[in-house]
Image (cartoon, rainbow, N blue to C red):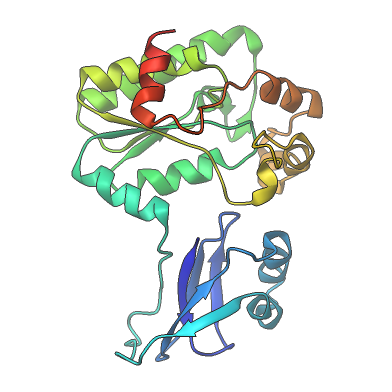
Length: 262
């Protein structure tokens, strides 16, 4: 469940918003309220916020309960940060050495999640960065192996230097693709955790598999189109068909050991 603190007033000013539901809100001197946005229509909320229709965006949010008035927020404390699971994990990763391996098809939000997990002390790496030339994505399948080797070397160097958290934002559809990172983590004393984007329930079907229809729609995202990363549905289908899932009752440590044994 995602929780947010916002003002006791519909006159909020949303200054930023992304597909994970992160919101930065300027509120002035107002009481806090807890808000559960777990059931919000994210697509509609994003549309309203991008259209600067703050009144309509506010109506989508269901107020659950009001805190006992404890303090008035000073004017200088105008930016509120989302309290969620990623924030907690990032803080823990700052205190100990952690490797996050993200897993999901292209366009599902791995890069955004990677930045959130990396926080201010960590660093994220993805093989796709090898193909970025002057702000454009120029993919060459003949260089894919080299791109992954390059990414593994960068991540290993970061772990050698004690950077934490280290976040790998590749698709990682097959288990063997994650093995080099896990071996490096074991060598340098890092905990290994696996993460998947979960900003929308539509990312997966009811049986827990990746939703090809929804992922194909996400390829039309303007940010992806601007850099040339829009992919055909056939590629998304190929990625989802080859995806090897973590067992529901399998801990991250057990999953990591299974991957090492591949």
